[in-house]
Amino acid sequence: MSDAVRERLAWIAVDWGSSHLRVWGLDESGEVLVRGGSDKGMLGLRPEDYETALLEIVGDWLPASGRVGVWVCGMAGARQGWREAAYLSVPTRLDELAHGAVMPSVRDTRLDVRLLPGLCQYADVTGCDFDVMRGEETQLAGLVAREPGFSGLVCLPGTHAKWAWLERGEVKRFATYLTGELYGLLAGQSVLRHSVADDGLTEPGCREAFVAAVREASARPGEFARLLFGLRAADLLDASLPAGEARQTRLGARLSGLAIGLELGGVRHDLSASSVTLVGGEALCERYALALEALGHASRRVEGEAAVLAGLGLARAGI
Image 1 (tube, rainbow, N blue to C red):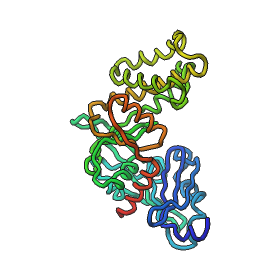
Image 2 (image 1 turned 90 degrees about the vertical axis):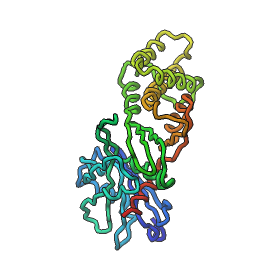
Image 3 (image 1 turned 180 degrees about the vertical axis):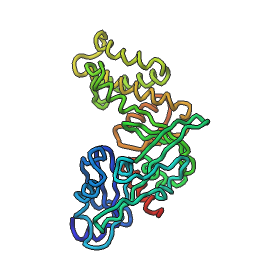
Image 4 (image 1 turned 30 degrees about the horizontal axis):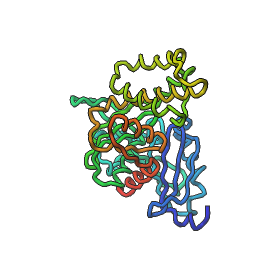
């Protein structure tokens, strides 16, 4: 890292997941000067390992003297992480996440580390279920940083997809769907593993198969298990399907559509004429956008990394 870049470094943003660590060095205006990462996620670390894992990436970024603020979201603040940053209960204003931040002990005096809290929801008479999120709240905060006072329905697709209802910059309630993990289990460990493959909907006929499955599962969620086994039966009997690998990708597209369609069926009463805001990576958000379009709903996308950085920047500004 050059001395010129090191001199411009104002703070460090960190997204610490279960499996991966992502780090950015930013100047005072929020411009990314340098980025790094590793596979040292929460699942492979003890509390005493976190500072070393972080310094392996940022050690060369730090000045010879003085302290650099390090703002961290994600699993480093979990109970099994660096130090627990207790959940904030919804409703929660997203511009006040910094109020729940905690500071872990560090040996390197150049580090000023703050771990952001996640959000939790308690079951109540309004019909909300017990639920938690850790990391996604910072992406939601990034949306609010970009659009102060935002109100609307937000979806964060992923292994555990989150749906959040925001009102004037405050999370009122949220719901988690195990859709990505369910798809992975079905495609990799069930009888369907012999019949499906994923190509990202690029093969001929896959988009159509995906859209049809979304509509079926969202309209008939009680038949989801039957529709799943139908994939295996179609692989064995349906002469209209293409042969070989193309057959598996077509059925994989249908499996993805069934899983996402089931999820959208769960939020169908909250989908309205207003656009759903999708926050996350391009490929998965495009798949959700296609699924929403199939059901007659508009959407727009906010890039996931930009949301994380904006959310951490909002927390930093809130101290």
